[in-house]
Length: 151
Ligand code: FES
Image 1 (tube, rainbow, N blue to C red):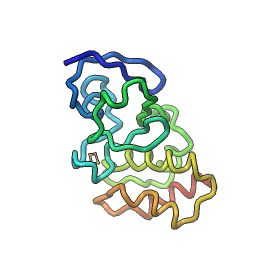
Image 2: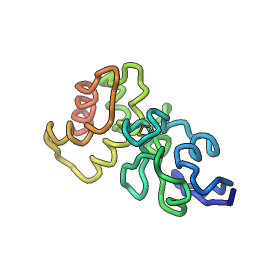
Image 3: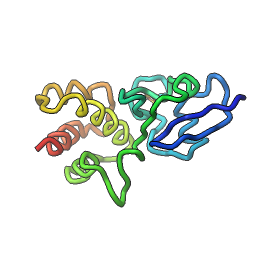
Image 4: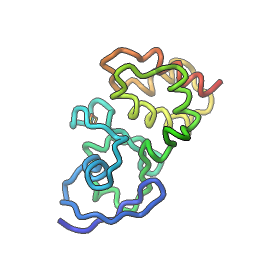
């Protein structure tokens, strides 16, 4: 293990991790940030999505050391239950979550997408979120939440 500095949600944190420790584990286990979820652990479901320098990435397959000193944002960096961001509020208002497990990753993917696409079409929204899986099948409400945010 070696000491690594991560810049998470605007704060610098030093932790001791192995060279191959996934960012997801560092965030959840060392920094107690439970926004990113463990779904597949293989980079295929999107539940673990966070931002690194504004890009949505899969934290389960990203070694934490590889993003040392880059700007990392988790769901907690967007807002809180007491003060949700506009996008988080749109997901709440549309009741986009069913079981809710995928929603954090959906919001992180949508947030990064919307930062670069101010007026996307319905198809572009659907395409942007197509890599995030929802086993409950609430994709229509999730897309509606993104559209509510844009309205
Ligand atoms: Fe990372 Fe599924 S847990 S993509």
